[in-house]
Length: 251
Image (cartoon, rainbow, N blue to C red):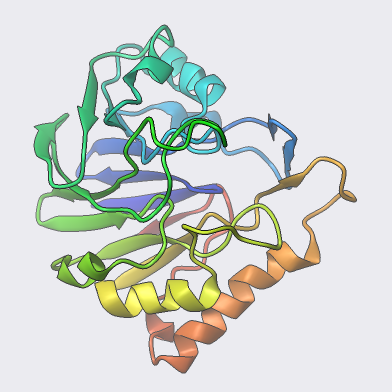
């Protein structure tokens, strides 16, 4: 059995044959000046056998969310990009493993292959290169999931092999995107390159700046529609997994 739950923003919980892996969990009402537009995921998603973080930006490596995970899953091991271990110290987590693109490891009953990601590292705007930025291919019991984290297109996407489900970022938390991100059209191109059996769009429609009107902004809702249209244009519409934050699908 394999399931995936979209937690909202970039967060995802993958469960494969009883092993639960949390990717980039963001589980609070607010993150900095951003506010969640919709309900929080159920507390049950905090139960994990492994946590994997793609990069050190606060909406991906979120310390308050990781503390919540540690309270539910004390001693859970965590995999982070090289240079990010210091950011997860003192949170109640277990073993910390730093990785970089090209690494492969077996941990908590799954195999993780560490992929490239075209996105700047660092914790802040001034600190742009202190950590790696990575993606992951999780494999267990013959099932393979690609978690892209946050990235722009890169050539090696086409080298990923036999991906059953790809979690691909399609936007962000604002109507404009800086370098190192995928918009809806480029995300559809990423799907064409990776060629997964199924695709789950992430990194969209969940958080927006606090000073906006209540509710999900129209531009955030339209991200999902435009991505679906781009997949249709490429003949890939049948691969789309449509979830709202907190919902689960089998893969």
